[in-house]
Length: 117
Image (cartoon, rainbow, N blue to C red; front, side, top):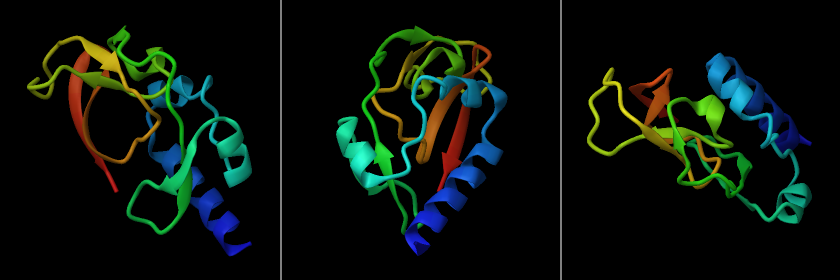
């Protein structure tokens, strides 16, 4: 029960921190709240961030697709390697739904580095 509550709280906090573009990009990859559902969808039930809470890590079906904003991807739209923050560059959709760690994401065609614990 405590783990379920902690997972729900973490998901609410993550949703509150995301931009509208990120929120709309999750429509095709809805969060998974239980290990059984995660495994059924072919995901990996694991700890992704620093909090001791397990979450579902799913593979995306649009990995590698060209993008300029996260709303165009199931996961994240990641900037081309070596891009400077604020630069107008192209990106590619991520291979999975992991939003933790430091990544250079694309937002409205511009690269922005974001670190999420």
